[in-house]
Image 1 (cartoon, rainbow, N blue to C red):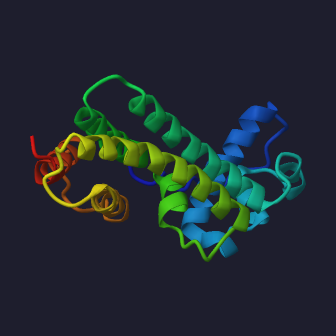
Image 2: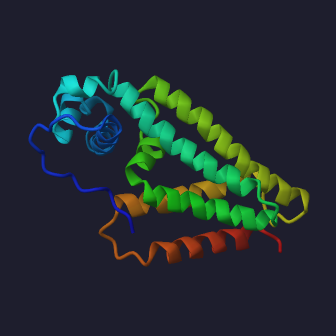
Length: 211
């Protein structure tokens, strides 16, 4: 199971390097600090110290911490949207597409724990207003793909219970709950994440699909 990346020891000031590599390093450090310290506690100075650069150097890559948070969350949501869009477009049975979307969601979350927590677990009342707007917009597009598959299943008369809206909300809530527990309770004696995910998703589908 992927856990939050451990906080590395602070390093001495680093010499100038390739811009794209330094930018990526800043984003990785900022993910950890935003999760650990919250939006207010994640200052430019703390992020710069974590990377081992001066605040002046960091400002050469990002205007402020809002821009850093926005890039982290936008990249995460665009990746999730791309996964959903690819699965949605496949000419296969909608139940199988639903299964694949749920699995991809959990795999994405466990593979990107810090970004996931910033997008899906942080309070929308705290942090960057622009970040909240962007994640809501991209999140709505992801939701549309997911809802579309469930509506296809409903149109085929294959829902055992509920309607597309309630099934959507129940399935997403269950997967989010599993991910949140795995990320916040890593010391529990978890079975293999793939096995837990498989059992959860198959149980959910058995409960709502009439096949």
